[in-house]
Structures are given as structure tokens and as C-alpha cells.
Image (cartoon, rainbow, N blue to C red; front, side, top):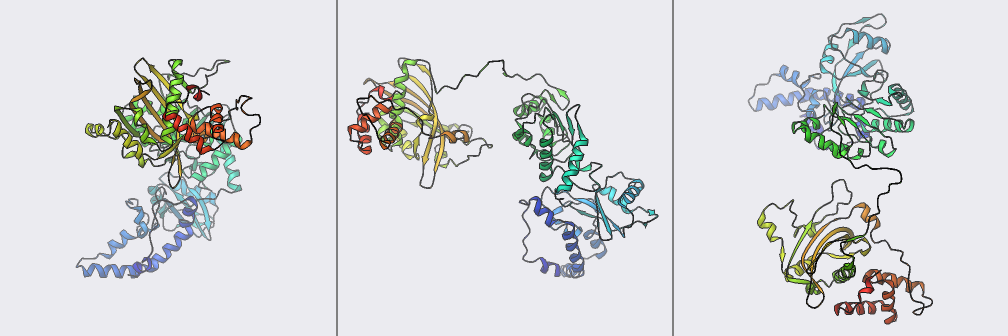
Length: 599
């Protein structure tokens, strides 16, 4: 009962959320030994309470067997490390923390080299001692293998100065983090310099925590982010001609902090990450900038799973990240099909804001789009009913950005009516999501959030033009106006329009796709465009700065060029609201000349 009362009310730490500093403090050897000292003091009360509970339930209690099970510190089969506090380990072990066997030497008198050399030579099981250090008259070092730890405990060694080496109890525990101070940095530089081959431009970091000149004094595994970050910093500061990098056998679960090679333009062409613990290819997402031609991934869980699906799948998935790879796990692959053409003087053509299969439709296109969105953004969507055919078909699709994009604003306002064929599998539901008829379409458009589109972001593709119809593919961004905040969205809209007997056009098919704007789109959205004011000299000789700003704003909002925007404002004595009302009346009466929308 004493043990229960001691820990009563204490909440077990969460499994995740431990950073390197917390692990160093919580799982240092000093705090570990303090906890174990208190547990041994509490054991008689714990034993009496446990015996009492078992007797109350009528169970037979074998104390010797329970003592052996509860306090077998060096037991290899540890199935539940989180509950290993009765076996000599920490009460809670976060995921990702490795347990080693700590060997204790009592009454140390000999030097480190004498002790370790004699133990290594006498032990029948090969091992590498890691992180030898002294605390008082006790010496400690760590071994990874439990078999080697048990063999060391059975050794009988006598040294001239030391006498008989007396071993203390072996405990399974994590090795605390070692701060990367100036002394450690100097040691790391020496190790990296020794492991670098300037002739082949290769750096061998395999089994780094077992480096012979490093491991006896320190424990610096690359699987810990702080160590990998420091090693990559030293590499990028001292060499730019690195071509081959070997990170095999380092127990890596990810490649965090390796992307600094991309940031510092280190062109590594061969990467070996074999025999690690990589579970997903997403760890390579930040390394896409490396011009890899050779990759060794064998010995990782992800490689095993992909090979089970076939070599073609394995090769295809790897080339999604590194398209130039020609050697994969020592197998030579067929040459990739690429379009890298870089002759002298070659320049990729600039992106054009529109593609028109027929330049004669330019006026019709701009008039239609500008008039449509002038009503749509001003909250007059019900008045767009005349722009739709009575049997129009309309569908809305919403989809998020890829996971590697940062802008992941929720699309809840659009998901309810979304006809995303990747999500909806039932044909009956797909059919119901299509709005049929003018009234159904307008009803849905009025439920969508208020918006303001950026005309400067519009990109047009008009690929079909006949006497009876025209297809318009329109892309751009808009700002969604909500009560709480303003969000930038991207959209793609596909119109099919037909001429009306009255000389205009109506929409017979409307497909709208909405997503979040990417970072690149958001960066340039709604930026003022520096358009020179081309005003005839007779209209005004000296416009004030405020009037020029009004003209520019009215031109963007209405879609008209600055000449007609100025004329509209002047006709209402520079009253912005009155000019906007006049423009809406002229649009409704189809009285705005096409040249007003030509820029």
C-alpha cells in the first residue's frame, strides 16, 4: 500500500511530446538512481501489501518467484517497457527512447583503457563499450546486447592495480543526451575529417555511434536530432564537394536536418541509408532538391514493403522523389525518361495569361467574365439567373491541398455540396450532387460564402469555339469574406456558353472546383497592378492623387479600363457609390461597350 500511496495522484506523462532536453533531465542516470533507491526502500511495504491482497482473494503467493520476476533488472525479454519500473527501468519511457545495459564497476582504481581492454578480451561475447564515465568510486559503461551484459557479469578478472574487478548490478536504461559543447564539436570535426575521403568525395557516417575514437568517451547517435543537426552543420561549413554520403546502420527513423544539404547547395549524388528504421518514403520529401543518381534503401521496413509489391512499384515510388536515380540497392535501372534540355541560349517561354484558339473571341470572353463576376461578388447572384439556360447543369467540387502545403484552411462551407468523385463512390449520390435547372443552380450559388475575385489572377483557356458554343476554362483566386477572418482560395471554373437569340450568351454547363490557395498564389493575390493612366488630354489636365486612386480602384472592381472608369466617375462628380450604381444599371441594360473592358 505504501507504493500506491506514494504515486497516488501523480499523472503518468503523455507518450509523446518529450523533447531532447526533457529526456536528458528526466532519464539521466542521477534521477534514475534516486528513483531506484526510493523503490528499494518501499519494497517491504509493497511486498506486504501485495501478499495481503493475494491472501484476501484466496490466491497462493510465492514470494521468491515474484521477487525474481519483479526485480530481474537484466532480464532480456521486456515486453512492456512502459511498465518496467518494477524491473529496474524508468516508470515511463517515451516512444523512440532506446534502452541499453549499464554495466557498473565498483571501487575503480585502474585506468579506463586497462579496464575496458581486459573486459573486452575476457568476454566470450563480442561487444563495444559505449560512454565510459566515473561517478565517485564507481565506473559505468553501456553495452547494447543483453547477452553481452550477462556474459560480463559472469567474468572473473584480476588486474595488478585494480585487483579483482567487481561488477555491480546491470540495469536496462536509456543513455542520457550529451550536450554538444565546444569540446564535443572539436571531437566531431576530427572524426568527420578522418572519415572523409577527398579522392572519391565520400563521407562514411555508418555506425557513427560506434566510432572507435568517439564511443568510449561519448554517445552521439545520429538518430537524435540534435546530433544530426550538428554533424550536418559541420559538413556544410567545411565542404561543398561532397558527392557520396553513407548514413547506414544508424537506427534512423527519419532524415530530419539532412535537408540542410539542399539548402546549402551540396550536390550529393549517392546516398546510402540502408539498415535503418525508415517506415515511409515521405522522409525524402525535403530532399527532393538533391540530384541523386544512386540510392541504397535496403534493410528498411519501407523497402521491404515496396519490394513485396514488385520491383516496378519500388522503382516508380523512388523516382517520384528522385527522378534521376539509375542505381537502386545496387541494381542498375533503365535510364529515366526526362526532358532536361539546356543548350546554350535556350530559354523556356514565359507563361501566358490566356490561350485562345481564336483571337476573335477575346472581346466576348472578357465581357462575359467581367460582367458575370461583377454580379457574383456584389451579392447580386440572384440576378445571374438570366445568364443561365433553364436546363443548365451545375456541379461543385472541393478538395484540400496536398499535405506538404501549409495553407490547410477548412473547406466545410463547400464540402456539403461537393461532388468529389474521389470521395463519393455511390452513383446515386453522385447524381444527386448535380444541380439541374436555373433555379437549383442559383439557389446553391446564393448559399456559398461571400467572395471577392482578383481579376489580375485570372488565366483563360478557350479551346473550343464554334457557331453554337464556346468552352471557357478559367483559373484564379478569390478572397472569401467571413465574419471572423478573410481566407484566400483558389478556383478553377469550366463554362460552356451558347449564343442567345437576343445577341448575348447563356451558360449551359458550369463546373466549379474550389481549394485553398497555395503559398505562391497567396503571395501575389490582390497586389495592386501598376497600370499607367492613359487619359485623353481634353478630359482632365491635373488629377489629384485621391482621384487617381479612385480611378484605379474603380477599374479593378468593375473590370473596365482606366479611361472608361474615369469617365464613369466624372459623370457622377467623383461620387464613387453613384458611379458604381450607374455601372450596374448599364450592365443590366447591356449598354457597356465591349471596348470598355479592353486593357
